[in-house]
Length: 140
Image (tube, rainbow, N blue to C red; front, side, top):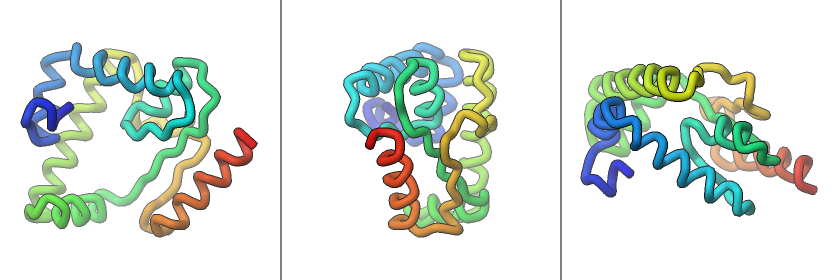
């Protein structure tokens, strides 16, 4: 949705903080797609959406340290690590406040996830293997 509006993620996060209809629209889009099934949804609230919609799902959250996240963003966005760290921190704070206010959801609560995987401990293929194994266990 940031791209649809020609905005960067930090700018979009600030915009969405003042426009709660953005979150409602995004979450409605994700919930509608999730209800159709046979999909992987990636979103800060995807696990919460699956739970709130009563969907059978594997909710996975992939974490890494703030320093590593900043390094990855800096490389991808061609910005300094310091700028990426500041942008990531601002986005995380804005989103946490917004989701608490709008939905009463604490995005720092990992208890709703079936898997919490560290992307510094596992490479992309290993992360995928863990998730696929959980999906096979859940869906056969």
